[in-house]
Length: 248
Image 1: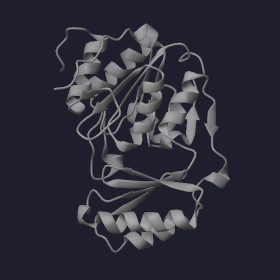
Image 2: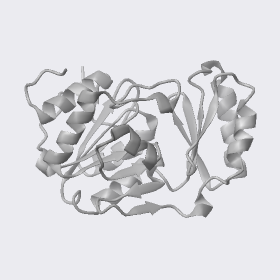
Image 3: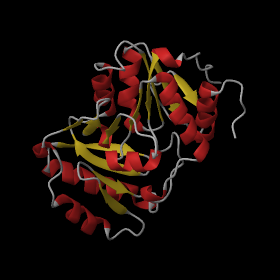
């Protein structure tokens, strides 16, 4: 049994949302992921109610904007490599901390031996996906590890059927910390909801700030609360904006 989620007052809460695996189910290819109409509408309603809501995702900012359109909110993309604050200013890590341009091609050639595995080039990070080739997980991980040895400015970030090579200084916890130092997030109780190992750094920051951390789905976590599925997360969100209304 999971502890019941605490009551949340939107006007006093700084909300941080992951997307994939939290508000949207996974697909074989990330470009096929969609957020259902009702959760998307409820996310927009919560942004209006709270006035302090941001998306914190492994996706690039352009992909975040595509997924939540027409909603436009502050966001941290590629685990915080790029971050758009509430004023619309985009903060990025310097180029020397990013993957070198030629690395994507080398990884694509290495993964060509494994049908169903592919490289997603985010520019600021490279994601090696193997959801379509789960039996090759160890081989894909070994390729990623070898790349990090050659490029020590990068760090491995394992996820659900994916391993990413991202700048070592980038993680979701640092992104959330940066938001919490700025208006309109400063001085509020932080709440972060996510589903993956990539979200654990964010959970840790929120826990340290005595906020509310929510893990979606199974697996070990430092989050203090849990929702069982994307559907359960959607129902929780619906109840936040329309208490007592059954999910559609």
